[in-house]
Image (cartoon, rainbow, N blue to C red; front, top):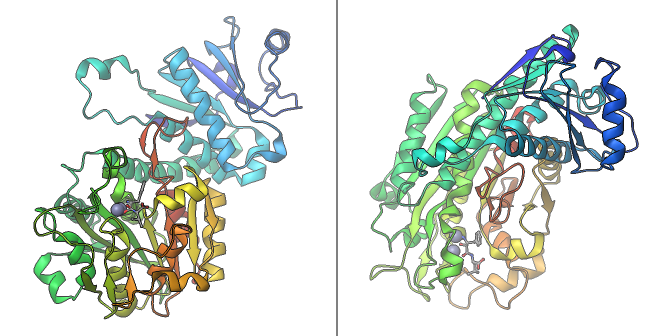
Length: 502
Ligand code: BES
Ligand code: ZN
Ligand code: ZN
């Protein structure tokens, strides 16, 4: 699908459907539609009780009086309540409706002038275009040709604007294409079966990113014997139950004038059976998603050479499978992490924190970054706390917290501040080792997991995003069909583009 700007008057744009947006309690029929159409539109609004409420969509025939075949009026709710999330939801709902109702090849979207005022021109356009790309996404690789043919994909989206807006609109389109492409790459990686996305596969994806970056991204893959030399005992403990060899992936991109090093870490468990503390069949069904953090980090690096932010970014992924076997880690085993701390493993299903512990302490020690951010599908407890749509955010730095929150607002990816409650630290202390990988008691599991990680970050300002909920859609929503969501990619890209060192 391609998106183009045109200065053609909207009455003359030749498309299957012309979409515009209507805020509640407002009258917003585009003025340049022919006068004879206005009463017809108004009558349809009254008869169908269309008031511009969020989620309302009104389809009206253009009666041949303009070039577009159909008109689609999309309710956005009250103007003051429209944020990037709601804006994208409205666009996505409209795209979904139009695709199911008239299977169009070409549509045009009229962006209301108040959006370009509210969000800054480029960003409003970027948000709209991103929503179109993301709502049109389908993972069809394993569908037969016959099934694929049934879906008619959008071929072209036209944004009709005045001559003065062309430049800003084009910038918005270009930005949206970069952000969407990366998000889609992360979705694809999560949607692929774990049989495909093995640690070795993720390593080769990283290498391909390096090769196609024209020198902008360098990649280093370490295999098991090197990981042993690096003394990552916790990561190796998790990896040892599987026949798939573990891989430590390191990516680096540097356009910073000085300093400004950001380390990004993605949890890269390519399948989480729980290990010997085996998950139930129900809980295991979606566990190919356990590399969603890694997918987000790879996706971010794949577009850094085009986005070209002036930062130094280092990405780490400690990738392995969590499998039960004769060689697998057993409850009661004690592992020694990179920083020398010992961990009693009481539940082999709390494996993510073990792999992250090594990478966090390794990066803190060797790269001495200004900040470290990890993305991990870490705990079911975070889903209990925040539901499916919101990621938990923990951080040792207030500045980092508020920068990430700003990026969340700007991209519509929802995150929520959670406490690193020191009183709970006792709950992850072991009687036999320094720490244990599960907690005493049943409650606050997402917080104790974050506290566990904080033992490995040294003095480096660090943020942890538990993306267990939002990384995967159990049922389709307008912006994301069932499956991987690519959560975190846009948030991180925005953060890196605006990073000023914290
Ligand atoms: N990968 C899971 C967390 C998860 C659950 C992600 C559901 C996405 C959806 C993680 O490794 C895990 O199993 N965590 C355990 C920790 C417990 C054993 C302390 C959990 O949350 O139950
Ligand atoms: Zn697990
Ligand atoms: Zn896991």
